[in-house]
Structure formats: C-alpha cells, structure tokens
View 1 (cartoon, helix red, strand yellow):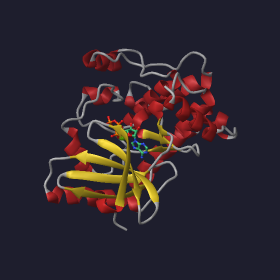
View 2: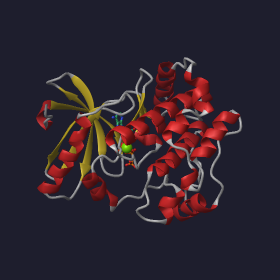
View 3: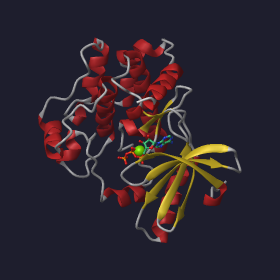
View 4: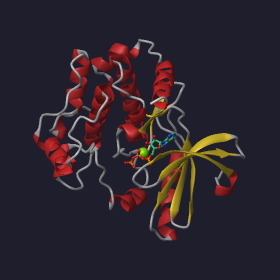
Length: 281
Ligand code: ATP
Ligand code: MG
C-alpha cells in the first residue's frame, strides 16, 4: 500500500538531525504508529521519483535487526520516509554513563546481524553507523536505521554532510571515495566504545583536531572494567589498517559475542529503565 500525508495524524517530534526532523505519526488506515522522517532536498521530480524507486527494495526483504520501512512519498521537494517507530529511542539517548558489558555484547550482536543482513541480502554498506542510527524498542530489540539504500538520496545529501562527531574510519578521512564494508566495522567499534563509556571518545570541540586524532593517535579503548574479550573485540574493529579488520562473520564468532550468546540478558528491562532515566534528566 501507499502512504499519503492526509492519512497521517501528526504527533510529537522525536528528534532533529542535520537534514530534517523525525516525527511520530499515526497511520489511521492501518492503526500503526510510525516515525516519519522529513528530508529537505532541492531536487527535480525525476530525481525524487528515482529515490522512491530505490527505497522500494526495502519492501522486498526485512530483518529483525533493521528498522522496518513502511513507505515514502514526496511533497514539493521534501521526501517523507515512514518507518517503524522505536519506542525506547536511539542509543545515544539511552547509554547514560555507559552500559554494562552483557548489554553491550547484545547490542554488538544485533548490530552485526543488521550489518551482515544489509551486506548479504541487499548488497549495501551502511555508511552511517553511529549511536543515533541504532534504535531500541521497549521489547528490547536493537535495530539499525538510516543506511545507504538509495544512491540518489545519498548523493543529494553528501554535499552538506559533515557532522561534529565523526565516526569515519581513518581511510575515509584520508582518501575520498574509499568506502568498503570495513569502514563500517570501524564505525561499529567506535559506536560501541561510546555506548560503553558514556561519551564520544575523541575530542569534540575542534573538528580539525578530532580528524587528526582519528588518523594519528592510537584507537580509543573501552573503560578498563570491561573483560579481556570485550577489549579484544573492540581493538579488532578499530584496527587503523582497514585490511586488518575482521568480517561480520568473524566478529559474530568472537568470544565477546559467544560469551553472552547463551546468557539471557533482559534487554527489555534495560531499555525501559534507560528510557525512563533519560526522561527524568
Ligand atoms: P544525523 O542527521 O547526523 O544523521 P540523527 O541520526 O540524530 O543525526 P535523524 O536521523 O534525523 O538524525 O534522527 C533524529 C532523531 O530522531 C534520532 O536521533 C532519534 O533519536 C530519533 N529517531 C529517528 N528515527 C526514529 C524512529 N524510527 N523511532 C524513534 N525515534 C527515531
Ligand atoms: Mg539518523
């Protein structure tokens, strides 16, 4: 089915990004609560239609580790992207002073499954792995969003893209157009260090110094109270030489993932508590 603006009841704003806002909406025809992302673009109708076509492949294959896509439409030059509403929010708003090791392992596990699904089933690399693009619901599920499905959309956004916290791997800063799966492995490792320690691990007030540190300095580490397995997993992801980073299949076999695979971590309880304490701050 196709979603149209007049079938949506607008609720509260969920957040703002570089390109627009995300709003909670209610789709009356299906009784589904959704998150609608508005992306402002200066594009002609042909290019907007191309974006909608490229997004269409998301209808064909779904995964429990990827935020579900419901549909997209455009009005004037804005693209409206409707997706599954994740009611605990994104990881950046949930990690507080840092999450416990068993929760970190489960988050890593879900992110690896999501990234591997994108690569194996859709042949896409995410390109924007970071805590704001990892969403959680109160059932304790962890899913990825904002991956690079549409080449046209990515191109149209690229011109303005440079955030103030970079998750780019060293090779991306040093050379344009070198992007491979292993660059996402770096961003995964960096995101996990942030989620574990409760803050972005590089200096944050000077963009140039930040990018220089990513290239020149030793990669960040987990806080010392994490296990040897956890430290080893992170240092494997954060190898500065991209060719030395493991594949998703290798990482899924890593002792840090295996160690907690048979442990029943109550992710729902964690998500609900983290969401609550975030609301009271
Ligand atoms: P950037 O623009 O640098 O990519 P961002 O990822 O924070 O940053 P958006 O993707 O526009 O920007 O999202 C804004 C915020 O909206 C996110 O940080 C997240 O907290 C919230 N959000 C996005 N999608 C959903 C969703 N499906 N369900 C619930 N909250 C969401
Ligand atoms: Mg996002």
